[in-house]
Length: 128
Image (cartoon, rainbow, N blue to C red; front, side, top):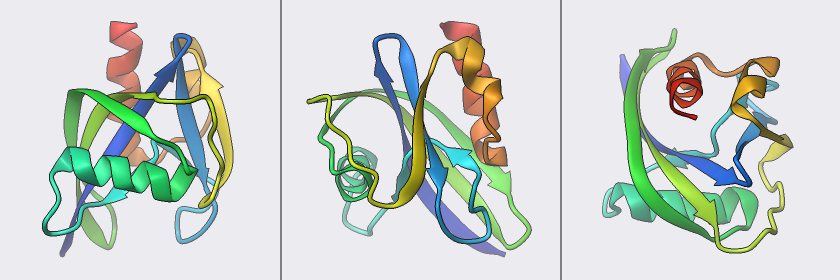
């Protein structure tokens, strides 16, 4: 099975968490934490900063590691590292997603998350 390693940003602003909706691929319409694949020479934090710039045209501050998830999708094994982040400015532009929502922790279940993101939402509800 193909293995993919990615990073995900849990972007927090005013006690709300950014969720983004996929606009393409097999999982189009599902919600996720923004981020993406790491390149060979990058640290997890460097990859996250680059991916958020590419996806949201935004600059972030990577605050701290949150958790890693391993999940088997039907066609690949995912290893995802997530980090708590903040925006350096309030401006985001959806370059790869069809929608975005800022959710309180009690609203996290209102969107249909990708399976690998669900353990992150569960832990966020426990902490906040």
